[in-house]
Image (cartoon, rainbow, N blue to C red):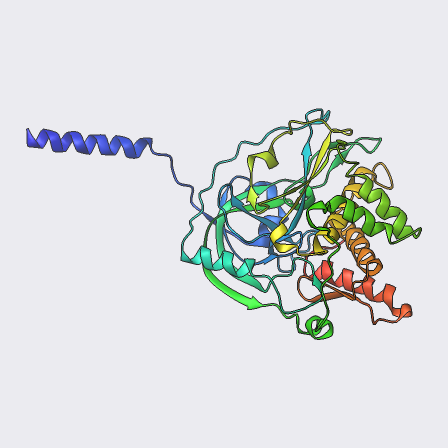
Length: 388
């Protein structure tokens, strides 16, 4: 009888093992290999060694001279991770309920994050803000982190938005900010964590003793109205006219324009981001602007809204109907507008992640345009890993 029980237990255990879902083996690869053909890795579990940066509107694994327009993979935590690191501002595009183009909800294999000691170290390092400088520093973090990352890779052949002959958006692109990244890694585990402190010393030395500005007004403070007033200080200049158009995308109080501003977690891959919306929009597209308010103190929130407003305007109203608005173009325009807004509102300095001083009020009038332009191009190429 005892032998029969042992035999029965063995058969039952073997049956359970046969029925259990197979655990996908990680494919060892590189960031450049993935970016060369993201679609071929779609749905696979991959293992890569890479450097991660969490900036203003980016959370990426950087490529090493991969030669792609976007030399980085968007990084995301699984839903419900409740982790700290990530971007401070994000614009996600979503098909509205009345979207007339082509859209198919993707069914993706769930990922469970291993919250071990290595992950906690990884997340904590990337979440530490740079706080030494007194001037405005948008989304500046203290460290970049190199690690071995394992996770599910989501990839598409083309991350650009598809438009019809009239310029209307009829198809969506990739992942992350502006849906502009052709590859996304949903993190499963982290190991071999090392960090490097980012050098902000030059910008910090210049802004030492500078008081931070805040245009809020207690409980009556409305960030959209504050941003509208902020760009109004640009007057009738070309930037001022554009800024007014940008802020008009958010609409008047109570008006539904398809553009929303919300606050919360923006470091997770959520089903909402891969699904069709439940509300209509004038052009069939929802523009979801999300901010991490804990990292946007004072007027940094206003600058972030101005930045996202420029993105929305560029995407909704392309200069030419068939224009492909690549990420470099979109970020260049948005940082130009953000800098102009900072100048008009009395900011003496403005620093970007990585220690890039994009505005210094002591620059001579003759040098300002060139200095801003050079800094933006340098920042986009070497920090955001973008090219034309």
